Image (spheres, rainbow, N blue to C red):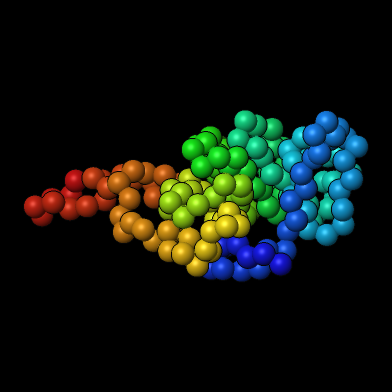
Length: 173
């Protein structure tokens, strides 16, 4: 069983990611028993049968929209966002929208081309779990969550920018 980083700890990953074969229709995809992350298209096509299962989560690709889960997000135990390439930053916006607009409070996992250099920023966007790329050292990646001591910008984790949080010359900024 592979490991992931969840809540700043390395834990076993007991979820399987279902990926469609090229040309496979989402409505005919077989969803196995057990904890499984299904593509957004499969969830939307099979929502009626899958929504009663507590062991089904959804993964969103970087070219899809979090808003497609507006009616379902609160019921899902896990939502993952796929990063197809290291340089594709759309997943940060998806995570931010899930946390702020849809008020999603469950596990939010980054999957795909996830590297140490991204983890600190992914965490700030709202991710709390990370499936680090298999060819990378997960112990080293875990250190990426602590690369910086103070973030400058506001985000989902800290609502005020640094200049609003520090005191200078005895005065509050």
